[in-house]
Amino acid sequence: MKHLTILILIMMASFFSNGVLAQNIKLPAPDLSGGTTLMQALNERSSHREFSAKELAMDHLSGLLWAACGINRTESGKRTAPSAHNWQDVQVYVFMNSGIYLYNEKNHELELILEGNHQAAAGLQDFVPTAPVNLVYVGDYAKMEGADTSRRDFYGGINTGFISQNVYLYCASQQLNTVVRAMVDRDALHELMKLRPEQHVVVAQSVGYKP
Ligand SMILES: Cc1cc2nc3c(=O)[nH]c(=O)nc-3n(C[C@H](O)[C@H](O)[C@H](O)COP(=O)(O)O)c2cc1C
Image (cartoon, rainbow, N blue to C red; front, side):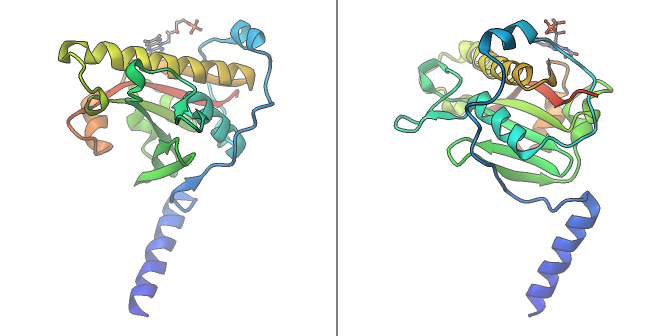
């Protein structure tokens, strides 16, 4: 009984400090029929640095992450983005006002890494905390089996590029604003996100509704 009371108090404290209860988030299935045509999305693809403060709807969050690197072939577990040797070395961390999450593409859910609003840490530009979602792309060198150590940055960078462009195209097709960003404090993020030494922050990407 005593433990239950403490648990309830912790949950209430978390709820009132963040406005929402931070926990793992099971995403709804992505809507594979929505959005503009690919050619229209390519025509609209562009970087924007202004965002509405409105939280991203669950349907948009689901579509965004599935487009980024969701599983599109369940039989092989392969993803919407290619990766050298199918290493699937790049993972997407999602900064939202309620916390930092890791996108688990196998379960299509967000795993809570750290509670609280850490958006300001997701980049070095003033607009970064104004976006409701900041994606941080992390290359896990431990997954690059057999890779020449001097080529790991190259593979991490190029594999991230595919994911980022998927996000750009999804945003263009859904009239969302986005910009990819190399200007991040990688050391600070590494510590905050409790990354292992073999994990490396590549770039980040802000996403939100148009103001
Ligand atoms: C690897 C890479 C790093 C970038 N880093 C930043 C950044 O740190 N901050 C920023 O505001 N924009 C950044 N951008 C966005 C570029 O400024 C933008 O893509 C460029 O101005 C062309 O505009 P467009 O994307 O609308 O075609 C980056 C783009 C790339 C591809």
